[in-house]
Image (tube, rainbow, N blue to C red; front, top):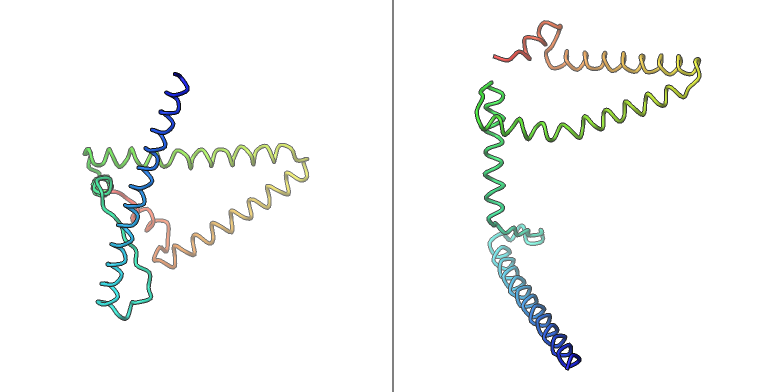
Amino acid sequence: MLHGELLFFCKKHENINKQKDLKKKEIINKIKNKTNDLRYMFDNLYVQHKNTPLYIFLKDHNEEKRHLLKIIFLYGKLHSLQGLNTPFSKFYMLYKNKKQIPSTIRLQNKIREEKKFIDNMDKSSKKKYIKNKIDEYVNLNTNVKKLYSNIGFFNEEKKTIYFKRP
């Protein structure tokens, strides 16, 4: 009796899989037909763009949520820049802090690796390496100052005035 029940279960399971496959094929065929119709209409309306690819996006409930979250995020950024303490700005700060954590962890790991690398060097190599790094940072600093002067910052006072919050 057990063998018969098992056989029945397997056939029933096969039928369910066949039904799923048929539904899947049916849905795919419907989508193909709709996209072919859209392509035909698009080609007739815009002859100059006949050979360009046509991308079709479906809008669902998740898209509306994403759009709403984007609006809340932008309001939060605006309120945060204005110095307002609103739920929107709190949402923005929470999101911003979540995104910053991995970058700070990466930076800490880089610093830790650099420190290990330097600790494993002998004294003369350390001096040479540190001197090269200092030269690198001096060059970076001069490049940043040139960049500031190109966009209108001529001295340190103007930088601090520009970045002050109201």
